[in-house]
Image 1 (cartoon, one colour):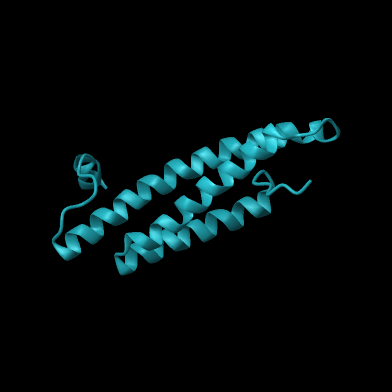
Image 2: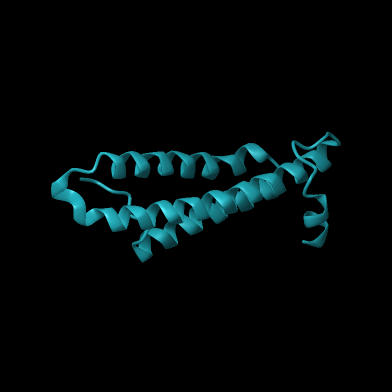
Length: 112
């Protein structure tokens, strides 16, 4: 059974670097559509991991703890990428003088 194992340190490092680069690219060109790519990827990865753990056969029970750890890491990445998407969306809205999707975190962005 193939698992995209985010508990592997090398894989985790590569995923963090790719996510940071995409968020940085979105911030530099001020396009929130670039910053939403990792968010959608982590949501899809979460769905894959949940389906894998729910359809786990008895011969692969030893992989359950690894998949649960991957699900926890997926949730962490979803949280981080969601906030970064909101941040880049705020930057894009200020650049184009349009209303942002969500202005409820203005107090937070002013502190950053």
